[in-house]
Image 1 (cartoon, helix red, strand yellow):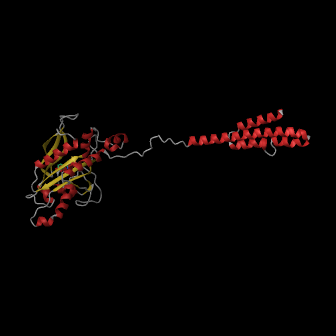
Image 2: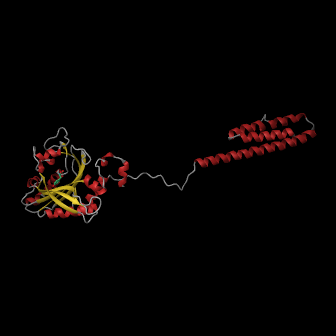
Length: 350
Ligand code: DAH
């Protein structure tokens, strides 16, 4: 009897040590298998008397039942543990915030362009796009800046091979060529009316875009952004330009007490020409005159190159630096930050 207890105890211990179902089945074989301990004990009874068989048989059965019970307990325990581990591994915490895809945003200069387009749009200006690889004709000559004109020296740029005076040969140094391109299209559309001595709708257009010059420091970049503006009609004057520009600046900077001044200047394609400066009355920039655009009355030669009669048509044009407007609006002091592509800088504008 004592031996049976030892067998039961050792079976329980072996089952307890089995850490996987496979271990447990191996341990089971040692006790309940064909040549397991219990089976051997049963076989050993053959030589016993009937009475001895009865008592020992009953005891062995009890021991066998005890071992089977221990086996089933351990099976259940292992199965439970496995399920528990699986649940833990696959745990889904529905209270965790979702993993969102990062939201992109527009570059600060693009934000400025969108704003400028919206403001001019509300004042009845079209938005035009033009090529960045320009010809000498549109970039210079048609804008009253013939070859050897000293003003060309301030517009050193990048040239491409294979161009000519009229075929694309350089990276445009300003958006002003869009004045000619757009006006020529406009005039072409109304040619018949003009030829019949009738008038055409006014040209009111802005042309934002990339421009290029051989220039690079904290306030100049070889690639930068401008926005051209052109307003041509029979009855337009400087006062209209001043009104529109004041409105633009006040809306753009969200400041009603911002003031403008037109400072005499020179551009080959305008006469007279003026630099437009603004001054904030409050804030960190208060009191300083800040240059934001060049402007002027379109030169008669340029009006002629548009296909219009300078005796009848008068125009006003302006060109603004988009990067500069963006720097002023957001208080950025180094232009190069716009082109470094540093996400820590750019994400502040979203
Ligand atoms: N294109 C000039 C520049 O890049 C800016 C400019 C000045 C544009 C006067 C104009 C203008 O349309 O009238 O420096």
